[in-house]
Amino acid sequence: MIALKNISLKQGSFELSGVNLTIAAGEYGVLMGRSGCGKTTILEAICGLRSIENGSIRLGDEEVAGFPPAERGVGYVPQDRALFPTMIVREQLAFALVLRKQPQTQIAARVNELAKLLGITQLLDRAPDKLSGGEAQRVALGRALAHRPAVLCLDEPLAALDEELHEEMCRLLEHVHRETGVTVLHITHSPSEAKRLAGCHFRMENGKVTRE
Amino acid sequence: MSEPAQPKYRVASDKPFLIGLGVLAGSYLLIIGAMVLADLVFLDYGDQPILGNERVQQGRYAEGAVPIRVEAGRTYHFRLGKNEVALKHDEQMLTGKNLFKANTDEVRLQPRIPNAPITASLRPEALVIQIALTNHIATLTTDESHGLLWGQFIRVHGAGAGWDGVHEITDTTTNQLSIALPENSAATPKTLQLSKPNPLVQALRSRDIQFSIMLSLISCTITTLMSIWVAVPIGYIMSRFEFRGKPLIDTLLDIPIVLPPLVVGLSLLILFRYAPDWLSDSVVYKWPAVVLAQFMVACAFAVRTMRVTFDQIPHRYEQVALTLGCNRQQAFWRVILPQAKGGLLAAATLSWARALGEFGPILVFAGATRQKTEVLPTSAFLELQAGRTEGMLAVSLIMIGAAVIVFLIARTLGMKRVFA
Image (cartoon, rainbow over all chains, first blue to last red; front, side, top):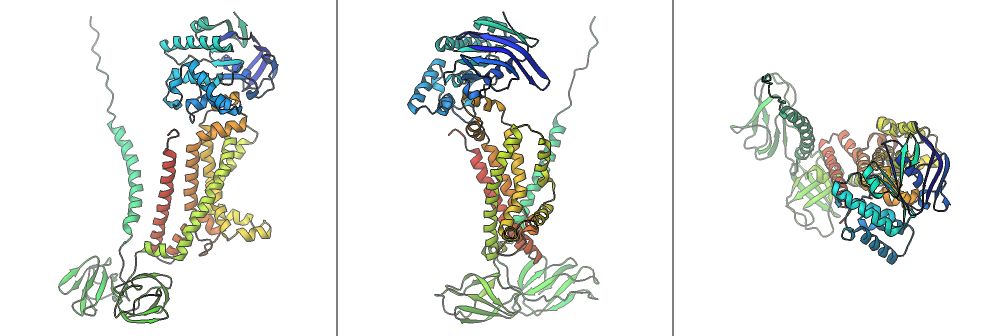
């Protein structure tokens, strides 16, 4: 579950206050809003990449407001995907598990499982600059899911994809959501995408989040 | 109703713009290339004859052609000056710079303007007339003064095993020079020829210059390692953290780049007057001063490079790494530093090259003592001061070579694909 209560934060001249948002465990939440209204800021606050001034952030049963990002148990897929340029796909998928010092065999098994889930088994030994947009998106998704986070934060994951790929990725996201049961917060501009995927639907306007 | 016919819209040709770009870029490239090429071409790679005293009396001559007495059968080296047309020898006109064997006992110099000073040079080749060997030291007597100095090198031909080759001159007088021979050299020959090896060989053989090559290579490498050691953290801090007084620190970091290098050396020298005796005694005018002087300037360039490198790596990567379970340290070592590899190499190459060329601060802070604080630029300077342009050029070529090698190594390492 994701529960934001009365979040306020400040960044230069940009200010948000009294933001509330609740997504039940295992639900697929889509947050819409105009560019620059603070959607990404909210997402970063949840991930712990931006400190908040007031309010509470609960992920699952824990209050995580003071936690470093590493201990929040979130998977984060930024808009530009940010695949690590110096690692092949396999290393990207294994990254979170290597940090957690899991045994080699377990890591290999998890990487293969993820690759199968996302349909990227044949890409495991590729460098990120040799991936197409859709492939890179899958890898970024796999990297974020590797450590089995309870919460997955997607920042406009389908923005840069063409029509055909768009539908394919929508299906994939549904599939992944069903298979993993992860709580998702998905940010988008596109109403059709929201309609297609959302279990619950939020709109951000004038610094407030409302459920529709 | 038809609309009035509009003239078709046309744009001017791109040619002048492209040609302009090409000319500007090309002329600079041309100068770079020509500069290096000139160094390579100027140096006479062949051996040079050993020449005796000048035969042309410099000064004004009232009349036209100037007669000069020479010795028939001897080889002379002639170099044309500014005011001479040619040297007339045995009905032949010699122009330029060359060796010739005299057939007569008089040659005539043809001046361009009768009353202007003569600047041509005519020098006889010094021949060995006596060879003596005692205790493996050969003493060669020449019929003309040879003008060679102790510590220079000389090549012996046509004298047999042990004799032939390049030798260091161990002792000289006006007409004599001594060289040390190896144990099992051949017996004393009746005759032998001498020549001066090219300046590059002389430089590479010289113990002073060998020392300065070693000191340069070692000090530059230490400087580079130290620069990287310091530049990576500073570059990272300046790129990733915001704090009070950052603009001030930014300015401080640029001081060594902006200050004249000589002033950096002087400042170091003065700083060490305040240091405890044991410290300044072991640094100032010793090799650590060389490293410190190089480091102060080279490091500033490394810091610049590293900062730009880190600036160009988006924060996003760290952010993702943090959510995946890294702390800041892990994100730095696992995600950021591997991406900074190219910049790291650039910073290392830049600081190495910078350190190799450092001269002013070293001269001030470490001195120019042979076999002690002499680095390659110091050698070049000492050669120039001694009036040996060719020696300086030889040292410069050694520096060019060293720089090119390091640059190539850095390039190949940098080019290596991250993914084999």
